[in-house]
Length: 394
Image (cartoon, rainbow, N blue to C red; front, side, top):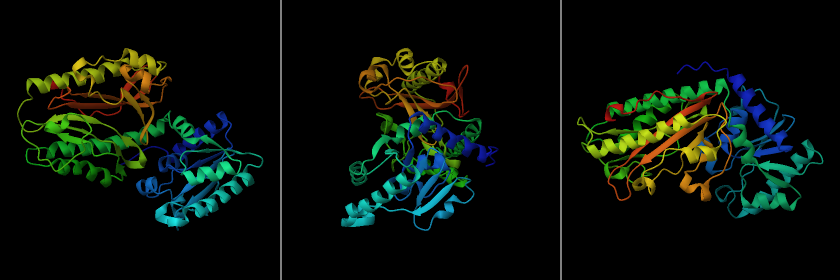
């Protein structure tokens, strides 16, 4: 799928955003393990899902723009074509898989090298931001005078505002998701299993150079209530509701997060199905109309569409959330959850957001999941996908 984004400009913008956050928080060095953070900062990718579970590659970025990269075995080639000031080293891993009962000793070897690199490239500095770190590593660094800072705060803040070229890449991911959704729509029929239907989205993603799908959230019939059933071998029946959430990390590592609900078979939805759909549609579109730059997260939560009492128990986990390479900051709590889960902030132009809805009564037999991915502009928000809703049900 053709993409007209200037990748050099994308990389320059993203790296500058990281350095800006480091300067803002007076952090001389940032150690990254999260594969998504490494991808954002350096545009290098190596076995993303595997490395998310197995901390086998990591990079340290310094405030002056230099990078020390500890790469997985014989994988320096993943940096080919990347125009950054990089010093390569071999990674040390102390997971039990890699180190067995030598894990603590390996962690000490790793820690001694981290401390040495920090003192060599940032003499006199003891502050180090880290996005993820296992216990042995944390203990070693703190015992050797390193003051740790939350690197995830830096990276989530850096990833918050998308450049015009990033929006092009997000669009490429969404077009791939839309093709997968269309393929699912054409295959939708009574007799197919949930797993078979879900495979069509994976096919289009991989065919267009996409990467992985974060969840398996596709459910039919009674499995649509409550939400969060992942797809199974259940056979779709005529008249079922079929709901899904793509959570698809597509080309160039950007996520497409679209939820839709369909009817299985050639009939018409029942009165109950239409009523559920109308409520979910109203929630998404009312909240989209409300969303605008300058609004605080709390204000959005307080003014958001009111969920009828019978649907409160099974509400979706948030009103909206940021989206970029994966789900990102912020996550906006419902008003009823604000005291326990809410935090404030402010919407800004250039943020990309997913507006969420799940409508299903407690004890009910079916439910509707909808979600729209949007970008905030100076005037409000604009949908990033034209994937249709079932407006003839309204």
